[in-house]
Amino acid sequence: MAARPTFSSLSEGTKEDWQQIMAENRKFAAGLADRIIAHLTLLGGDYSGFPVDRLQHSLQTAELAANAGEDEEYVVCALLHDIGDSLGSTNHPDVAAAIIEPFVSEAHHWMVKYHGIFQGYNFFHHIGLDRNMRDQYKDSNHYELTEQFIAKYDNPAFDAAKPKLDLDLFVPMVRKVFAAPKNGIYKDAM
Image: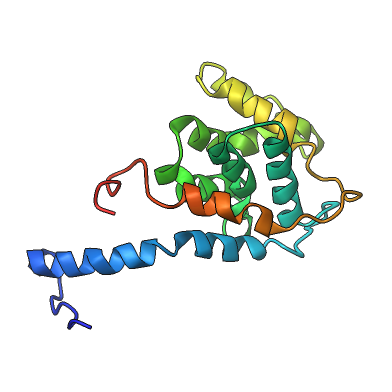
């Protein structure tokens, strides 16, 4: 193994330092799908008052999308839409959206980023919020996509009577979607 760079400020790094850093970064990035899968398992057992735990909700959402014929990227977004629950209790859609952004289309990123507000249509009025908060996004090109995601997949995915699903069903899709970034500043560097 080569010696690590010795700079104490990024601006002191040489081209050789950065070639070494990027080579190591590519190795680390190759394990992203495994880290995402491991993090999803943290959602298991956390019911937070819901009829199913957060992992089963995510799996049910992804299964509904897959069974309806949605493409792999969409299904992975359905699976990961609530992955931020464990770290971003008050902004989980933002956390999930940040994770997927370099790997998915703008439309799917937008759908995940705003799904919480759109899901709010189904319950915000019960907790003192405006259930029509989603209407502020009526002019978005992705409004209908997100509205349908909620109605068809996210909203009905709290079925405690459904047999438990296994995360392994979706692992190949996660690996494929997170194989390499499609967007962002590092897409050509990785």
